[in-house]
Image 1 (cartoon, helix red, strand yellow):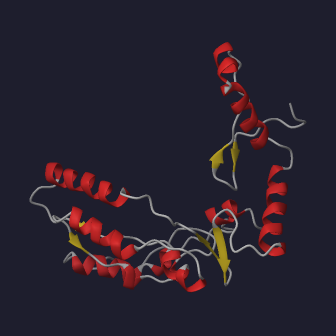
Image 2 (cartoon, rainbow, N blue to C red):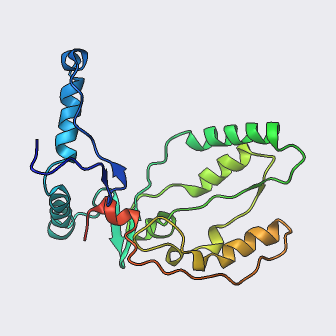
Length: 212
């Protein structure tokens, strides 16, 4: 349909792209075929990523919107707006974990921790909505009374995360690892490790924001 072959995936967005839909009478009659065709054309449009980047730059730098695709940037760090949290998801997760503990992990030492995202450290101070982590932790602890809670919030900071990604920097995890190991009554692991530098790192927020 277009001058170039259809692409299977978008590297920057880390997702599969829609493919040309198979024509069937039932899909045509129900309208599903045209919906799938529309998705295909949007995903396979020539110079799609260039247009997405142009749109993102206009929204963020020209029209001065506070975020683009629910990503905001402060001091060179890209942060995803994770608000709102799905209502009841924490209680449902606690219920499922508690059931697994009762079935498979009886008479074992069980620990519970919550890993925050970057928004926990940066969203509120820059005027963005953020998850109520206190309520989240309370619901998980109440729903998993078998588990001993280990607080990791005080062992992390915004600089412990990659600037354009959601993940921790491995070389910044020693305080967190130490907290986990000491609370569990274990001996410290060996401190030496091999450093492998991989460059460049285009994090998940780089792709989702569509910003250069």
